[in-house]
Image 1: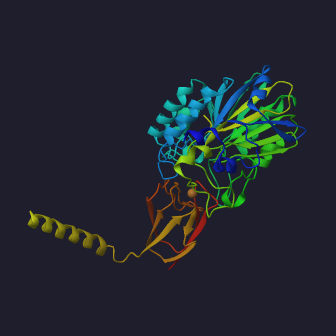
Image 2: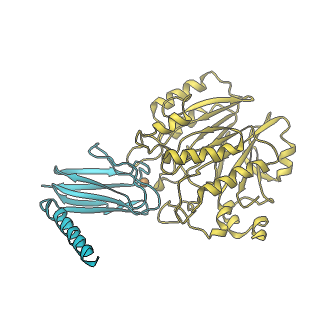
Image 3: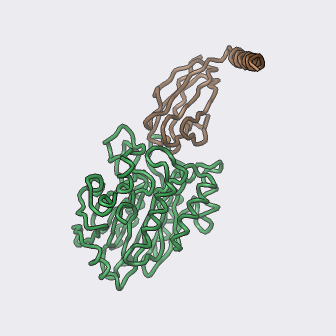
Length: 312
Length: 109
Ligand SMILES: [Cu+2]
């Protein structure tokens, strides 16, 4: 057990796929669109003129099926990992599916566990968070009081503009995630007077880019949102929903999905359905994790460190 | 003791029979949800059929009519939703959580 905790195993290697492993964490730095990995220590030294934040996702509090009988426990581990980070994050972003069934007790438990980080948390809902009787009313009352529409909003932190979008409500038959005309109009207005040199971090539950259409892993009008961002020099798109790491770089855009803290899902097309992927219990934590992101002023790209829950 | 049990058993059998026999005119049919798919994908029933949608996945799904004729709440594992298809016609539907899941009920007179 101790051995599997501090050494990469095949399971973890499979999760990280094309990334090189570097003792508990890995940093992506981007130069000219070419990703290169560095050790965490090097990243730490480079953050003197910036700040970092953490993305967690898909905590699915209430889930208790064989793929993870204890989603509360693994969320607690993830929150504990945050205290181990080399640099204290300014805040957390949770990219949705906080709960499994939108039940008050699930939200209560999630709040209690995530609250142990003692950091501000910026949420967007997943489709599992808007299945209460009021189709998302419970989520909005708890997390979206200051937000627009179904829960979208923006805020600034040390010169970086953060935008939280909602693409899990009013989904249409046969389709993907959906932002809708009202939200796109709000986004256009939100971006209108901003300098193209302001770094943008935009996040939503379902990927804004098309990951895998057959499983609905994409956003129907995501391209419209991205086109509004095309004039900006640094855009980072953060998503959850697919319960696995995925990253690509297109020009000034970096796309990144983070792991779930609850259970993994199969890689696109490798299983009959995107349902929970069953892995041996002692390997589960190497399929779960969180992402730490560091903004360095004057650098085009954020440094992203993905940590599995087996790393601590 | 045994007597009470058997009498109670008889009472339940009677109840079940009553429940089963009373809506004798209503036919029933079932759609199951496994692996993020409705089975059968196209179900043909006679008008008046009571259709039960049963979720057997370990992820919640819902049953949403495209035309607004019916809409279930989210169904957790082993939960079901029942709807009586009174009128003839085609009723395409999808999962409100995973809208790539599509299927259809065809109701004939
Ligand atoms: Cu579904």
